[in-house]
Length: 291
Image (cartoon, rainbow, N blue to C red):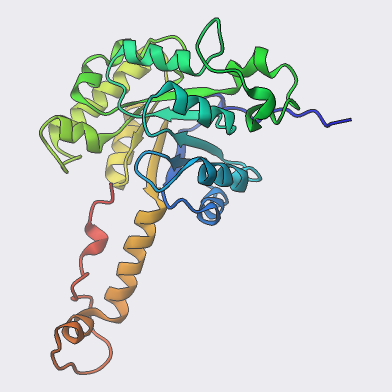
């Protein structure tokens, strides 16, 4: 007799039940091992990225399996809001779905339909063959599937900010996630996530979500930005990424132990001693924005 299973609570449910904002990080490396390390860090959630990272269905599945043993909510970002792609991610067992570049309430409503079975949606029915239902070991999965999934849509354009109230009010949207990098680019401030106009657009998005009773998250790798948005009412934040942490920490090691001498060696110049201050070619890397 097969065991019967109950799926873990969604990220939306955990946000609702929490007495503080939820803090998480991106997992962009495509590595199940790194995902497992992040999952055991004490953070509340990890975001496995399928848009800007070397991830496919197989690697995302492996990462979901790697983090399943830990008390962390895995959120997975699809590359784009395509019905077929969403179906595949859901059948993998993705319970917390993040869809990028949602610019209107109409687009958000279409994505809601993609995550629901007929007659409320258009999700293809293949649960008996899929990890989503644990191969039919979750009782009444077809009837209860919508309660096992939370849907977050990304506000990351000026058009989306302009329609944020309607997007937030779309039935079936469980939360918004603001991406300041793409938002800045759409506003003509490429690479300037802390530009006052971009900051105000993020704050407007938070206000729109709060007014609609929908949690809003923000990508904010700069601590001062994260604190600003949490103070404004953000319910969850992403404060780092595996690849960025590795890049900055390895640069800091190079600065600390090689410094100017390493730069001189690379240029074929004479050096004196084996140590030196952090004035080499990678000096100052710790101050770089990492998102």
